[in-house]
Figure (cartoon, rainbow, N blue to C red):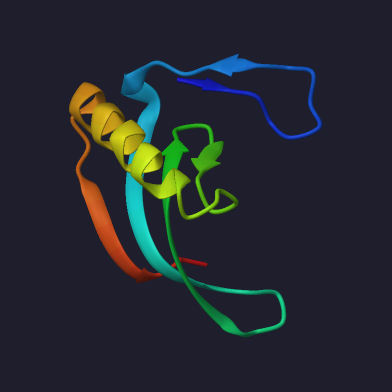
Length: 87
């Protein structure tokens, strides 16, 4: 999986063996403290880097689901369900 952090010129390639968590998250806590009900996916890698679909439009949720299902199959890591984003 290729990650190109926002505002970064560097790109990083992660093999599927570097995946440690794949999460399906229903809600998250906004900086204001408000709970936002907007499902998204998150993939975390061994070095702490992560990929998230949180900023995607709702239409991108299906494409994100396909991505995480593919990564789950390649890495052997299950997609875990979370009611609220872990802090």
